[in-house]
Image (tube, rainbow, N blue to C red; front, side, top):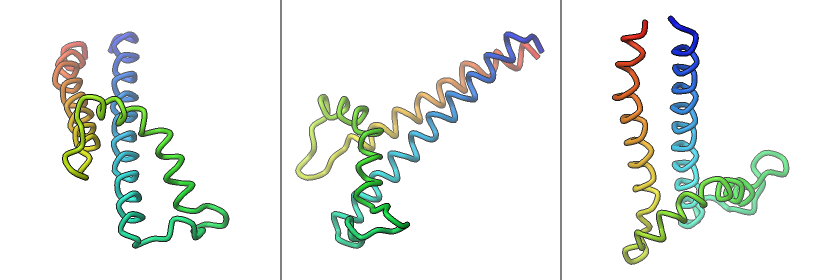
Length: 111
């Protein structure tokens, strides 16, 4: 395999991993937000030493909210249901499938 093709393959793998990680961060953010809203977990009670769910939720919000906020500009909530995480997950999945669909044949041809 040509070294440039190998580097492109590594870049593709890194982008795919980053998108999957971001998708999981969105899912964890949604789940923690739902559990604190339903008062199933106390956001101020520490779990591991000094780490509380409120701190975890705040950290996740700094990572996830910029992307979700851009989606919220175009898609307003329906009642109290926020559709931006669903649309974000669909966009991430679509990007992953599009990259795999268009780049995998190139890697197969080059090898």
